[in-house]
Amino acid sequence: MADEREPQASATSSTPRWKLILWGAVAVYAALFLLLNSSKQEVSFVFFSVNTRLIWLILLSMALGAVLGRIGPRWWRSRGK
Image (tube, one colour):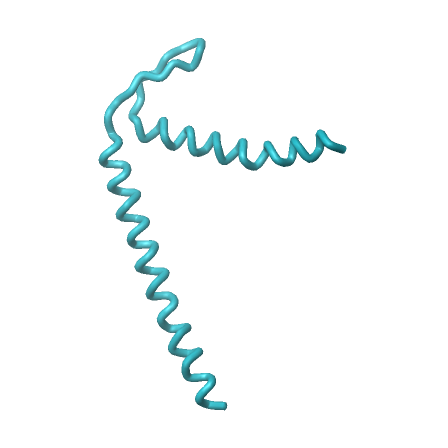
């Protein structure tokens, strides 16, 4: 029974190391993403135009997609009732 607990303890201690490495890689990727997408672009919002950095356009698109991804299915289900 003691043998069964030892592999679990070693597996548990190595799991946070992989998570730390993964989060570190994500942080490095995010920093590079910000640095490489710093050029300015003009965006037309129908009634007005804005000169902004490309990264803000990408983040705005991602946020809008996340919001629509959450609201869309709920709206579709409520429409069917």
